[in-house]
Image (cartoon, rainbow, N blue to C red; front, side, top):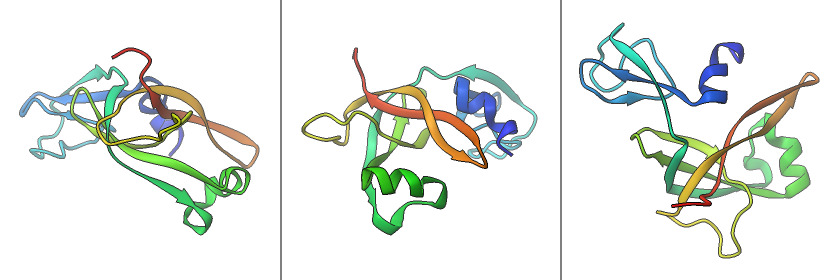
Length: 133
């Protein structure tokens, strides 16, 4: 499963539906907007977006693969980020500003360690405050 998702995790590869024009991320066999199939072109997503919604995960709320991180940090912020191209993705937020993350704040993708499983480090995307608007 992890290997099949490498392109979207490392390159933010999405797919544009040729029927409705909307971008699906992560890529699917069927467009989640119009249910068309096999009518896609792959697109490179910019990695820029805004915080659509956010929260802090703490204590027992962390999924098992993030239990070690929760133990070290105590809590960590996550958000739904609306990408410039339209799709919304869920990701961890890193390097929070002093005032914290806020809805509408511009963010950009960074690639970081997500978790380690059976001795294999899994990398993927997280977001930080955008350095340039």
